[in-house]
Length: 214
Length: 214
DNA sequence: ATTTGATTAAAACATATGTTTGAAGTGGTT
DNA sequence: AACCACTTCAAACATATGTTTTAATCAAAT
Image 1 (tube, rainbow over the protein chains, first blue to last red):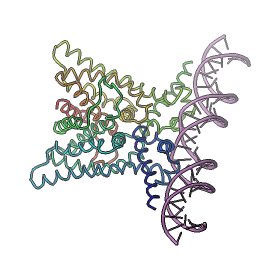
Image 2: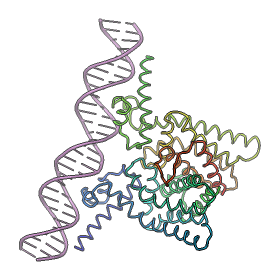
Image 3: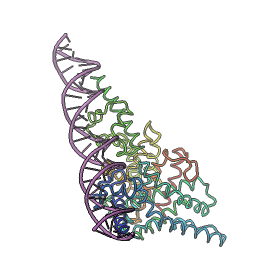
Image 4: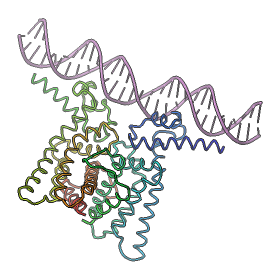
């Protein structure tokens, strides 16, 4: 039983890892089960056996990483809110944005394969396929809600709809960065594009902070 | 001959319009030729007859609108550069960004169907499908190059790589806005999301200007 | 050693896709 | 009327896809 479940975990894991990679590179629709199972070295039927369907596999791929990532972001945002409550002063907008953005970008270097996931997520918001957007939306929306609330507390004098749109601009900047970073064509805009994640955080934070306060 | 070419134009146009709409809603890969021809009320073979292939149709859909749009943006950017040259002072960064962004967002209301196109373009940058990205990249890249040059002239003291990344944040904010605007789910972030294009321009310009100058 | 339950394997299924083909239709010209 | 280029149409083609099925395989428990 132990060996059996270990083998199962081996196959499941190989499928998850390969699917994550291919979803990031070719998209959900552009990735066939045959491509996944072929590259993973498992039988075609293994996906339906272990996950039930391609869609269920997608869900697993997203939830596996999004869980831990959301936990970190939630914790940092909640800390800020708690501290702001005890100290009786409003949260600092830069700190709020950092709490959300920093874990997201640094997540790329947290584990093997996480980079693919970040690329995938960065693209998912714009994915025309309802399947992807629905699954993704369900796991990201509570997080964005929390961010919205916290930003509202940091900028209490701003009308809600202005915060709403500026937050969309911020998310747009972040997600765009997420999918171009690490998957960028050489010499786009005739520039070398390499930058380490830490420096990227240091670049985007001032940008979005200035934008939110504009 | 006149009637014949008018009929041809009728079919071609119907295909172009329908394809534009479906590409925006379902994506390039998610849109079958049968869906296009069915909705357009033309025969399945008409696409291959008039355009040669699905890919060539995509190219036509993009070039048809991108031509005029790019012309406006190029003209406005060139005007700024010319004026800056004659007056001997550097371009104003806000004016530069407005020259690029304003025509893009207002383009949605310029003609019937243009809104679909803007949504489609907003998604194309993040499209995992090489076909879409390649075609799209070819028509947008010269424009982005020009924007990069003009922004560099407006911010001569900023290192090029900082401009490079801040421009990416800006493009991310713009493209994200392009595809969520007009296609947004109701009550996202528990807000009504309607806003007219003019007001949206007035919201995004201060945001990206502040970000670029941060 | 045999049985059992879970996993893997190969094949088939039903459907969907982009493309091609060859015939039918269309309208104007000679 | 006969011809013409151009366009439309229905059907077929070849391939790709997610899924299901049925048999083989395997490791552990009896």
